[in-house]
Structures are given as C-alpha cells and as structure tokens.
Length: 331
Ligand SMILES: Nc1ncnc2c1ncn2[C@@H]1O[C@H](COP(=O)(O)OP(=O)(O)OP(=O)(O)O)[C@@H](O)[C@H]1O
Ligand SMILES: [Mg+2]
Image (cartoon, rainbow, N blue to C red; front, side, top):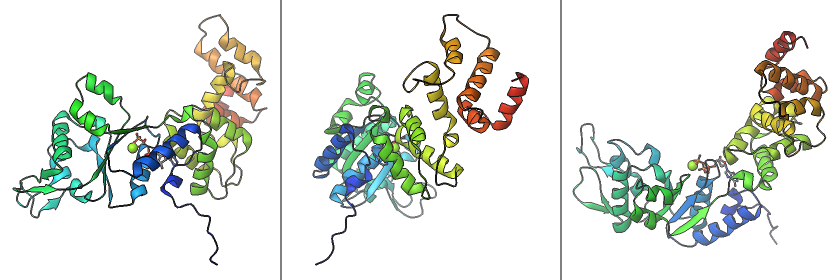
C-alpha cells in the first residue's frame, strides 16, 4: 500500500487563517471555484484580494491567470494592452501582438483595482464582457476570448456608482458573486498562523517569544497581511536567530503598543512607569514638546530596565540619537 502523504496542495492552503471570517472566505472560494460567473472581491489594501482570486482560479485549474492592472491601464496604450494590436496599427507595430484578454482565453482575467479604470475604458470593457468579442487595435476582424472575470477593488464601488465615477451597468456585470475580505484587525486570530507561515517562508528556523507575538497581535495592521509579511521579512533580516527579540520589532509596531500602554489601552495593565504615563493623560492640556520627549525617553528607559537598544527601538529612533538625547536632557 502506498503511504498517505499529508501535504496539502489544495488551493485553499494558499489562504492561511482559521478565523470565522477566513473560514467563510474558504467556503466562498470553494463555491465560487465551481462556477464561471464573475466575482467581485472587496477589501482594504493588503488583505489578500489577489491570493483569493488566484485560489478561486486554481479551484478549477483551467487556463492561465492573467492580471490586468486597471490602475496602469491609462493613456493611449491601454487598448493595445488589453486587446492587442494588428501589424501596422501604429508606428512601431511591426508584428501583430496579442492582448491580455487573448492570453486569458480559457482561464481567468483578474481585473485588479477595477475602481481605477477610466470611464472611457469601462465602456469598452462592458462591451467585451457582454459580447465576449473585441477587436485588436487597428484590426479588422472580431476576436473572441472565453475568460472568467474576477475583479478586485479597495474602493467602495457602490459609492463610486452613486458618485457617477463608475458605470452602473458594469458594476452589475461584475457584482454577480461578491466576496469581502475583512481587514486583519477584525480577525486577529489569524495573526499567529500568518506569522508562522511567513516565518517558514522567510525565516531560517527563527522563533518568536510570546511578548513579541503579543505586540504583533496588539498592533492594528493598517497595511493588513502585506504589512505583516514585510514585518516578518524585516525581523528575520535583522536577527540571525533563532530567537527574534522585541528590539527587532519595527518602530511602527512598537510605537503603537507604547502609545497604548501610555493611554492605558489594550495590554497596558501593569506597565511599569505608570506615573510617567499619567503626565501624558492628565487634564493639564498641552505640554512643551521637549517635556513630552523627555518623559517618553525616561519612560522607555524605565520600561526596558535600562536596555538602551530596546528603548531606542521602542522610541523609533536610532541608538546614537537616543544617547544624544539622554545627554541633552541630562538623564
Ligand atoms: N490569507 C493569506 N494567507 C497567506 N498569505 C496571504 C494571505 N492574505 C494575504 N497574503 C499575502 O499578503 C500579501 C498581500 O496580498 P495581496 O497582494 O493578495 O493583497 P491585495 O488585497 O491584493 O492588496 P492590494 O490592495 O494592495 O493590491 C501577498 O504577499 C499575499 O501572499
Ligand atoms: Mg492586489
């Protein structure tokens, strides 16, 4: 009997995360992968719209996955990009060239950042979607291409329609099945699994202590999964391992958890140096910046029990700058 191999090659394995929101995405991807209807994917920047689109495409596994970057489809070249051009269509067109829609024949055309498509191009795209036929620039005959449409945007497309920046008829065409990916801050349960996934990909046996993991979970991730991925890459690059330390955290993450501690937000309980924090929160109103800075430095030094490298990282400044400021303030 051949042994069972436990490796998971299903398209869903591309989508790490087991939060209720992510499980719903898995269910929708599975369902959408079984049909050829258009799909509209909505989500903030970096939430994984393209990975989801690729997973839907991979479910069927037919043809190519062709990315049409709508934000770059501007100017005179946009039509030739999309539809290709005939030989002699313009100066320099020595041979005919197929367009992105030809390449997507039998597969999927992924219209990324569809909200950025200029109005004039929206009309042309609508016609192609209706007729599944188009004409290359300078070409005489109609060509057909049978592709599945997946579009993605971080804009509120319904509002774009209201504001007359996006054609309603095209919106209806694209919005047949819809999938919304929640921002990472609304599915923090996914953060540890994503971190492990990226550590496996970029790390070299690197490991995270709980306190670093806690700071990463606490952070709001405005750039979502992409920002988390870059953060792991950065931390791995800064530390030869195996244990990543708090000092490897980027200043954005550190400043955020530091702020929270000062304002008594999540994770702030029991933080040392509460007296320094109080002076930030009091009703006394505005303070001179130098005093705020002096307080922040004192607090960081106290909080890190005198570890200046860590204090500098938490303050988001270099070690030399910290030394200079310590001297300046006579600390
Ligand atoms: N659930 C996930 N599992 C694993 N990797 C993910 C997941 N979500 C996102 N990623 C990774 O995060 C990065 C950003 O994802 P992607 O490019 O799909 O985001 P996006 O929503 O298209 O972003 P943008 O709006 O900026 O184009 C990619 O490297 C992707 O592989
Ligand atoms: Mg994208």
